[in-house]
Amino acid sequence: MTPAEQRSDENSSAAPAEIERLKQELSRAHDMRLRALADFDNYRKRVQREQDSAAQAGKRQLVLALLDVMDDFERALAYANAAPASILAGARVIHQRLADVLRAQGVVPYPSAGQPFDAALHEAVDVVHTDQAPSGVVLDELGRGYRWGDEVLRPARVRVAQ
Image (cartoon, rainbow, N blue to C red; front, top):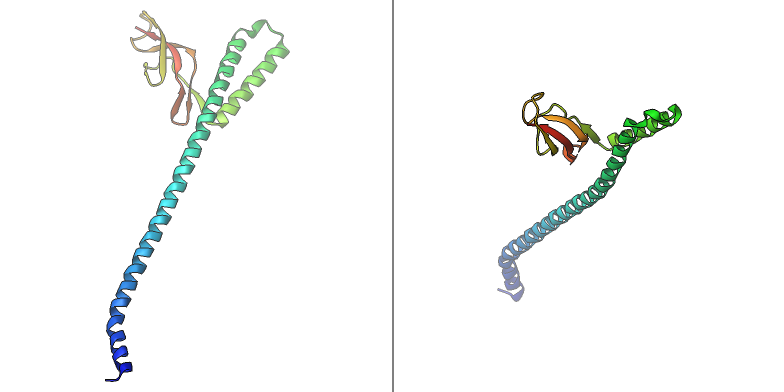
């Protein structure tokens, strides 16, 4: 056998082993690439969730401050009967615009009077001994409660029958 034939014979027997080694190396590289893509996608999603959470937290503080302004408007309107009609009308328009802004952001008040007391929705500030309502029922609201989507943004401050 000539030296050229011997090299050809060696190459042909080594070729399947080399091909198998290269296939395994390609498979490992492919797996690593897929893992890197999955890791990057998870990272991107986590960063987006964190950004959304931070934005929501900042927005929450602003909405809570606006709810205090809404409460002030409601108290002012409750005692504004002595004010001139034009001032009262203007205050009602401003109050409605503020309510519309909050509603557009998903912030809505919820009713409490006549409902059973629920610690997740209500903050009891007074207990009244009465025969007018069953024990554990909210008699009236001292401060309106608000939801933001499915979340209780601010619990209602209530008086509860006992």
